[in-house]
Image 1 (cartoon, rainbow, N blue to C red):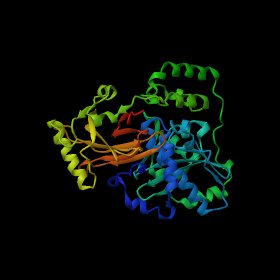
Image 2: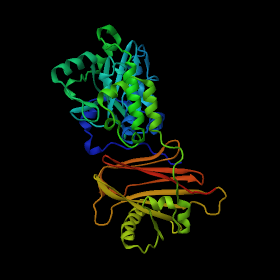
Image 3: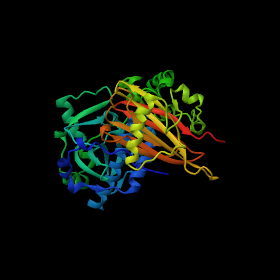
Image 4: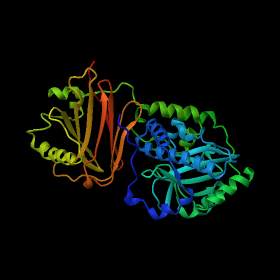
Length: 429
């Protein structure tokens, strides 16, 4: 299998000067850390949440390593953190319930520097998730490094809330300014070592009235069919979200409701080698390429010839025996053409392996959008995940290899639009 880690943040948006300010807190991540975070993100059913969960998991692993290196006498337990519980992480992309000595710590991670930071409202407003300290982490995934960029305690947050009155935004987040965070990490260590936990009073957790839980459960049942395709903030109110996040049973119910069906329609790419296309692909708008090498379809050939020649300059060659199809992806954020090409590695072998090449190009007379993310995964993990911030610098593509029993699923993200393609497989018994 070919594995590539999730996408690297856009270097144009990443302030290297700011990053170098945190040399003292930078921690090198290990390959096992990247794999652990990638595996976790794959268990997140909300596509728009996966990247933030991946970052937050890396932040938690880096924070634990940094703390152990700086003070081996401090005990830290990240294993029970909410980020490692997919049902919670599916809703809240933050690492709550990290235990450091007698303190509760919450980590929120960003992948670029700016003057404003988004925090899930739940980490401040749901007593079960409130922490003594909130630590803001930064990730340079390209360099496999994380760093601490600031912290604030709960009482300091309350003081800011009382003076600035921040409002909860439509996506259920607070936007907090960089200026309220203390960047002196030595003071964070000093607090964790010496401060009495009673010096920071946390809200008392309470049981939600049964009638509110029942009412919410009934409402969720009524919108169950919409849960897999809509964001939860579009279906329930903020007050109902607080009830939800204070009830583990409802959280698990939501997670199961968003779980993709195990039985999914398969795009049978094995037929492409016979110049045929199955009903599933046809219904989804796929068009067969009669010949990958010598297509007579003008609109197609003009676009694909450019892609093929560009890929060949990078050492990616498509054999004449390959089969393929394409379809258009359209959204308000931009439009593009998705090409899927497959071929057998060894046509005479008893244990045949096949290659799936996914390439992205422009539609005729249409410019390619920017900030395209391509992800390919099998049934257990992410195999390819790349962020293409500038499509003019090369052809966005990904390539995987599998045996005849394997299937691969492709997800394409253009800004806020997410296209999840049903799995590709050989369709051979």
